[in-house]
Image (cartoon, rainbow, N blue to C red; front, side, top):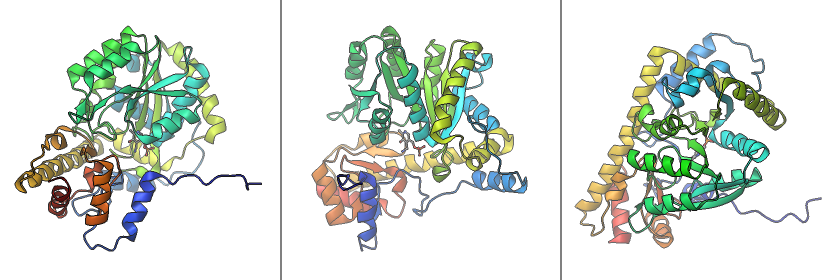
Length: 399
Ligand code: PMP
């Protein structure tokens, strides 16, 4: 039956991991994967997660199904974390929320919802560049995917004017995807003032904002600060939808903990939206897994654990910020003639180095340093031990 099936291309990031594994260099460095590593280069289980997990286990809970929209204590706390205690729609009970299969699943539910119900054109604009999976998720949701300007490769920063101009040129009522913080892959975020202007432009065009918040807390170390854009939009009277992931900020990658929410105009509207979200989720996967959501819920709802977790998030963000500074410092010490300010200006898990595809190939072939061809490196993969060798390798290929 499948003789006509063509071989599909391998996933770009998984390909890097495979090449890395095959490499025999004793000091090889993998900066491809988007997962946090501690300063020894090891995966990190947050102590708050470990403790919450012990609490969950000791409760001897049953393994019954969750409802279609998941564990209510979790989604309630997830909404509070994102929108904040002062959020008017949250206080009024007009935010519809469902647990999701991490951030990807949240985006996919959002895609399905918009495809089915969005009254305008079923086109979503994503930044250039964006997380590679955005295009795939929204195309598979049968939305048309277009792009807006975001990254300026000359400044290795934000193309703010281009972005705003593109937003103003979109047909009225377009759907626009915004990275709430720690833009992947560039690490380039708008400033708060720029977000205000973006909000105005989105409002002027009557556009529908879809926030992807996969890194709340990971950018600045402060979950409130990282939610600025989303909260500002809500305050300004937008009715955004939101994909949340707890993969990064709780290190719950494989547990697949996330949430999808929509800000609606009233509790009554919320109830109708909620009913349709359930109708979308039921035939997709019936209901989400409970374990990770119970762990996240325990952390979010237990005041002491919550405080501890916020400290751990800050710790991860701080280590990343420190590695950025060390990388820049080492490059400068070596006498690099290039400017590396963007390494420390950028934020979140990734740095967009500005290295070309050829330079990235050289890094892998000659120095056993692996990352994606677009020049993105995962700063979380840099450690006190490997930062010197990494800087030397980059220096050797850039001068
Ligand atoms: N959005 C962005 C921008 C991401 O970088 C990621 C993780 N790489 C996700 C969403 C979703 O990841 P997950 O499904 O693991 O939560």
